[in-house]
Image 1 (cartoon, rainbow, N blue to C red):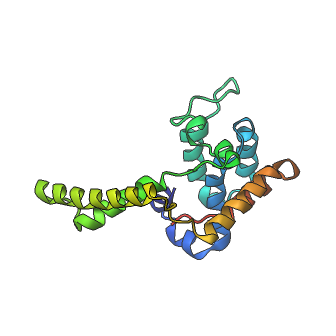
Image 2: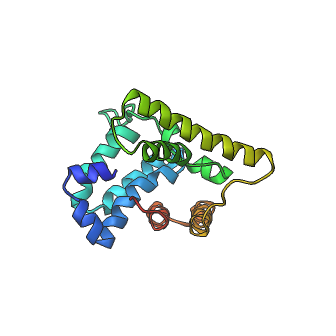
Length: 186
């Protein structure tokens, strides 16, 4: 989404206008809507989205929801909603992201210190990172728990869960806005 904002030349507006940033995050917040309610939530969101975000909204519709065809049904999106919605995962307390994979990738990049290492530098870096992973695994085996989640993320997760559990008392727009208040796109 950040890449799409940059491609439309909207990064400065996103960074400097809190209302605009909230409206942009509401598009991403569609991931928290139950699949059965996606069409209605998208239509409600479309009515309140700033004009500048319409190209991004259309991109999202094409790729994640599917454009309406002449018969009133939606075409198959590039990414089916079952792949990207996190509504059920959130209610079940499951992880919603692949942050663990991203953290491992960052650790490997930090160890290498460059984008295109030689084969030998890459192998040495893999060995060092694997050594650290082995140590972490041994700590787990001995009974140490995982590194605890930061309090601010626990609180945000709880607020998101509360919003989803209260979804029947909210409009789609209120649900999206509530979710959008609880995350940032960095």
